[in-house]
Length: 62
Image 1 (cartoon, helix red, strand yellow):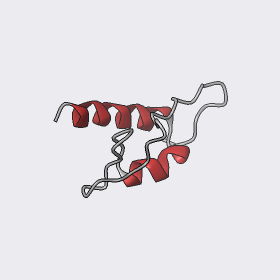
Image 2 (cartoon, one colour):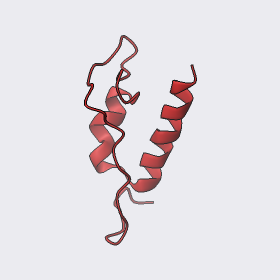
Image 3 (cartoon, one colour):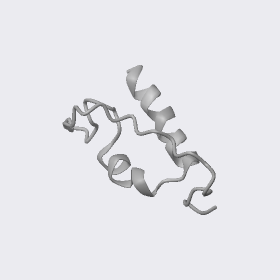
Image 4 (cartoon, one colour):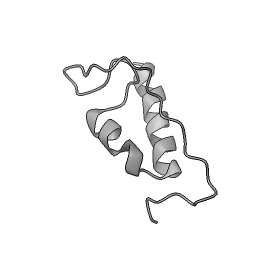
């Protein structure tokens, strides 16, 4: 499956809250995305972005 979004599909909004600081585990203390997830966000499909949002939920529960 291509990482490109369908031209009619609205992109999933970034969870960024403008508190950009990575902890020692390379996880942003603001949005809870990893450094890699942050850097790849713009290239991700909506399906990939939704998977990241699910991982964020799991990180928030720890």
